[in-house]
Length: 68
Image (cartoon, rainbow, N blue to C red; front, side):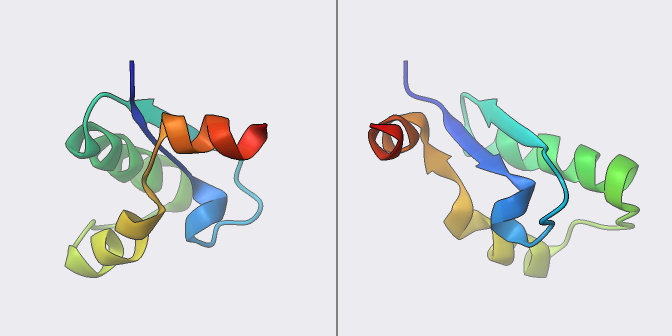
């Protein structure tokens, strides 16, 4: 089953190993927002941050292809 994924390194947090995977983009965004608040002290998750991270949300099929 195809899922969406992202990791913190893709959006600029080079020292963070957080990676999340979910069935929908909305779930990935929600998990990233929770992580950003708890681990990076982000106060909000507005359109600017969404626009920065959205191009980095990929399908697991793409990740599996890149690993081969």
